[in-house]
Length: 257
Ligand code: COA
Image 1 (cartoon, protein in one colour):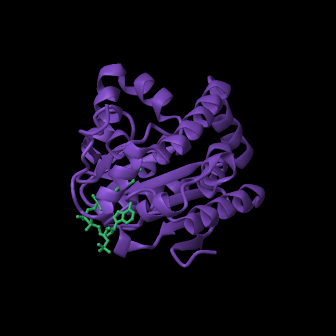
Image 2: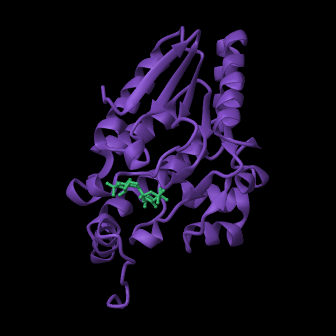
């Protein structure tokens, strides 16, 4: 288990708390593996009624660790990140997210696979895949145009434009925007604990029915995005962008034609 993932238990609620604040909760391979393992076990454990994912009151996650992207780019469906994506995608019980501060890359796309999402008003969400020479991931190229319309999704995915928690709630990506990180975490916990008192099989059946339409197509898109993402990570464009992040400078794409 990774020291950067805290797992807390409160009645039937299992909380996964990202705990790498000095790196803005950037997700390492070890953290993905730990999250996948916890989710896989929780799915089999009848006493777990719901899962809450949070980074605490100040920061959700800055997304995949950029140094990991350079040193050990995920290679397809056997990678740690894909195992995590799979575990969340297949998870049969309700997943609630509490989001404050930055939620970048997979920090935003994973929300599309949660059942209830609470955000602080000032949370800053962003999917800067093109800005890093990459492409959308985790079904976002399918889900977001359908949810938001092509025009708005294009601003988010083709320009990498950021948006606030308040916007996420207005657009239906989140259930509600709250005044700050503490209120967001409290609300998410309160809602997640409600599942303790509901019939677990009825909840699981309902979730499965809600997620069923288009599921095979979504699974196929996630795999297609994942394969392309892996290729793009090794492209000169991505290497320039990731190196620029480490060197704290703007990337220079002018040489690519
Ligand atoms: N991977 C690795 N390290 C990261 C990181 C990431 N995704 N995000 C932040 N960090 C590190 C920074 O390098 C810095 O490390 P240092 O103190 O050793 O120099 C530390 O976390 C603090 O980050 P900083 O950028 O100084 O904080 P900020 O408050 O100014 O900005 C973010 C926060 C999240 C907006 C900004 O860090 C960011 O844009 N991160 C990259 C996000 C990204 O592109 N993720 C990949 C998406 S696919």
